[in-house]
Image (cartoon, rainbow, N blue to C red; front, top):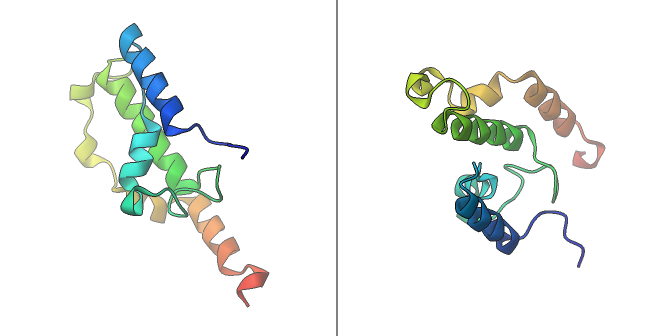
Length: 112
């Protein structure tokens, strides 16, 4: 079987080496699993088996930003006003790309 995404075992190796080397790890896999129904990655975060959809990319950006802030690579974490950020649903609702994808999906020919 040809794999396109990293396996959990491979991600465990990355986490282990990252911890050993004190490297910053933005754990996308764990974030995706925690946001997926029953921990199974699916359509809520992916367009197909490999590429994230708008919600997936938004979550990735949030995880990267939080990891960098926690390690003071951007404005120190304590100075971020996370409570002022829109919820994930509000962000996606106002996302132009999300609206375009919704319209495209809504009118796919195989839906008729």
